[in-house]
Image (tube, rainbow, N blue to C red; front, side, top):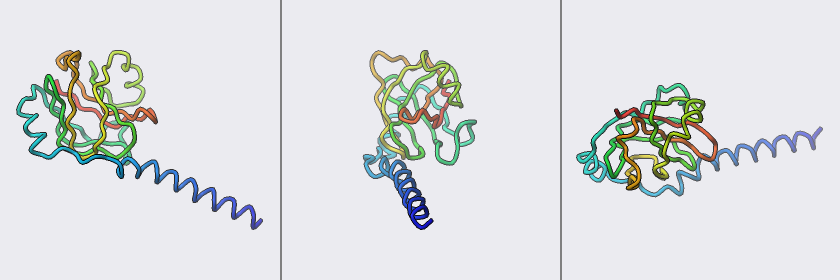
Length: 155
């Protein structure tokens, strides 16, 4: 019985440690986000704006975003926050999505724009080959875990 309890306690400690590592590592290695002034300079050039909100169907206490997203022809910026996590990607979608199922259904018609490495404010370039006017929604998706984080309709 004692060996069983030791095995269970060590397995539990290992599981908690791995979970905390997956959650904390992206925070520890994240570069500093752009300043409010840097993002504000981009927003002056932006054609569209949208809002990340916490109250989306598949957002939860560990997967969320909040703030104002500005979309321009050459850059996309956020003044706000994202829940920390690994391997975040920014997609542009032709339709608003707020669930993993909707994301997976529409993923073939989306375009992946950039990796998101910061959790407070971001500023990412839009590739020359991408026209944001062909889409209407910014989506943040965790590629590693197939997890919906947040979305904002901008037009």
